[in-house]
Figure 1: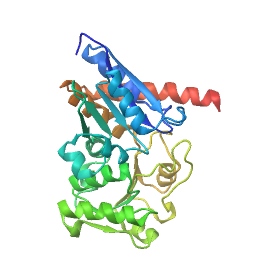
Figure 2: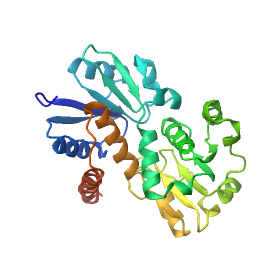
Figure 3: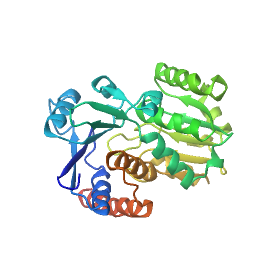
Figure 4: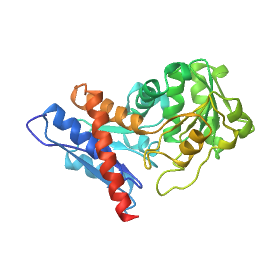
Length: 293
C-alpha cells in the first residue's frame, strides 16, 4: 500500500464542510503513506446518484469510501457483504473495495460513538441508566447499538414512528425487549432520563433546528450530539445553559475515522495525533465559515 496512492473518500449530501479530509491526511502522514481523500457531495453533483458514485469509485480504484447522510441504509443494497456489526446495526458508513471489485460494508459509527462517549462522559453515564435517543435513521441506528454496548436502557423517538419501531425491534432481537422501547410523551421522557442523544441531522449547518425539548432538561443530565458542523449545536448550547454535561460530534468523527483506517491498513493510530488533526481542521474550517458569513 505504501507504493501507490491510496484513494479514499466520502459520499453524501451537504458534506463540503466535512473534516474527514484533514483527519485522513493526518492518518496517512502519521503512517508514512501516500493517500488522498475525495469528497463526493451529491448536492454539488447534479444528476449523480448513489449507484453512479459507487460504480465510479470502484472503477477508479478507490480502496474505500465512507458513506453518510442520506445513504447509510440505501447503500446496503449495493454491496456484496456486510461485517457482523454493520449487519446487526442495519446501517453502513464505510464500503471497502477488494482488488477484484467486491465490496464489504462496515459500520464504524457505532464504535466511534461508543469510544467518544466513554472518553467524554464516562461509561457510568449510560450503564444501567435510561437514555432518550432522538432519530432512528442511519446515525441513530449506530448510536442506538452503541448505547446497548454501553449498558443503557434506550427510549427511542423519531417523527417517523415506523423507523423507531424498526430500530427498537432490531435492538430487541439482540438485547431483549426490556432494554428498549418507544418514547411516549417526549418531554416527560426527557425529564426522567439520565441523558439525551440527538442522532438526527437537525442542528447541522444547512439543517437548522433543535429536535430536543430542552426545557425539560435539568442540571445533572447529559446531552450528546452526532453533529460537528457546527461543533456546538443549538441543542448542546441550550443543554449546557441548563447545567447539563455535553458531548459534541468531534470524538465520534475522529474515532470512526481511526477505526476505518485500521480496517484499511492494519495500523492503530495515535488518538492524540488524530484529536489534534481534528482540532486543527476545525479551526481552519470555522475561520473560513466566519469569513463567508
